[in-house]
Amino acid sequence: MKATDYIASKINRLTRGYVFTYEDFMDEVDSKEAVVKALNRMAAAGKIAKLAKGKYYKPEATPFGTLLPPQEQVVKDMLEENGKIVGYLTGYSIYNQLGLTTQVGSIIQIGKNETRASFKRERYTIAFIRQKNTITKENIPLLQILDAMRYIKKIPDTTVQASIKRLSAIVKGLTNDEQSSLARLALKYPPSTRALLGALLEQLQNETPTDKLRKTLNPITKYSLPGALKALPNAQNWNIE
Image (cartoon, rainbow, N blue to C red; front, side, top):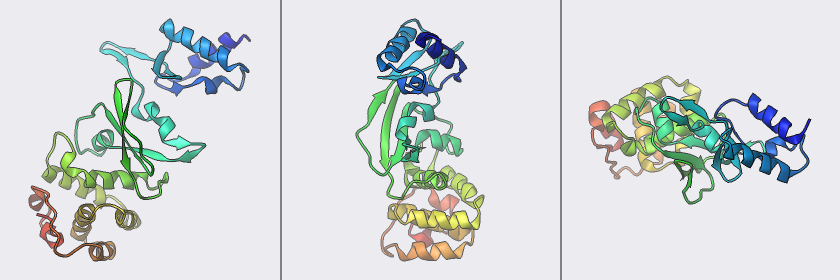
């Protein structure tokens, strides 16, 4: 089979929105140059779309226009390296998934141990949040919850009061072990995040992790979260006002 025929055949089998590079074809085609030329010809013909330099995807046409790939596909090269997880999606898209907002912005935020300057990729702006905890597949959902607590005042199209009510329901749905892990991971977050989590766990009467969190907080520091007292009656116990 000719290289161009093999490339076209393999692309036809890919799901729409899947992001690929020339490397996906090097198992059967020896020449990188031949693959790149074939992909560029297909992009010019409109059979595939170019996401960024060296990155392509199968576009999906709708009555409202061509859809971009899922956000995780757009940035997957920054979430995993050599089979190891090095980043995770956070920010607006995750706030939406958690039921904290109905909005999904054009900014894709990624949590990583080592961050870099933001940049554009197609219609998206890729931005980074520094994560001090080791990132694993298992703790990503907990880190996403903590990120929402950390940036609770920046969640769009909602209020702090509404966000706290939703976060309370999310934390309540976790197992005791997951709540304890959440408190452990929170130790590397700002004091305001630890205070909010402590108040949420205290309301659920989970005493073990709240004791650990309280010991890390300055007893005279106040944390401003407008509307928190309406959603969290014990907020003042944690100097939240």
